[in-house]
Image 1 (cartoon, rainbow, N blue to C red):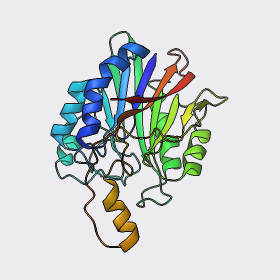
Image 2 (cartoon, rainbow, N blue to C red; image 1 turned 60 degrees about the vertical axis):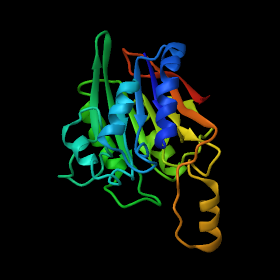
Image 3 (cartoon, rainbow, N blue to C red; image 1 turned 90 degrees about the vertical axis):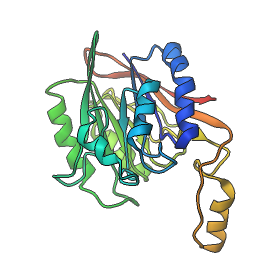
Image 4 (cartoon, rainbow, N blue to C red; image 1 turned 135 degrees about the horizontal axis):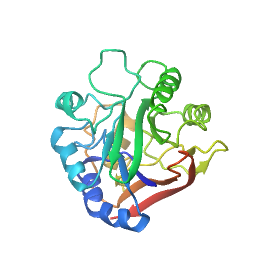
Length: 259
């Protein structure tokens, strides 16, 4: 099977890229499952029911999240009722929502999608390494096909988690930094890895935001309003090919498609 992961969708430009480019990418790569990180989908910060519905209507099957989870109060509706939406698993017990889900479709083996958040240079959460081991053990009782979106800042933390899970999950792709890395590979145990999938949205920008306010912030240390930029829109992420019988990845290919 082939899984397309769409990296951090930023604002309306990112949502438009998904809407216009996803049908073509599905056909081009023979994709059967689309997972997208939507934590910046609503105005560049957080996600709402409306923006999630827009992404689902565009062909996204599962939406993952990250440290901007709480930026929009409407997210509570998604956490309480939407089985296609996952937030980082390593929140404390009792936090609304789910950290993983199982995707099932006719003719396709069940696929587990797991979301985790790092702790290095990030808001403090429970240890993602311990959380991942316990959850992967539980998920493997249902399926060997497991995809992990690890929302983290430090490349070392992303690589270490992926190495820990090598042979136990099908793929680990990092999100959060919005800079696509060039280290895609399949580890010896059969786990595909990419330290960061990049971001889907305007790249004539600073990580999706207008350039000048960011520069002013760095030069003056004064608060600025960071509007979502508009130009040079790309859909970024990766396509992972996975053996359904074993859950081992056989290939990973970066995607950076202009709108």
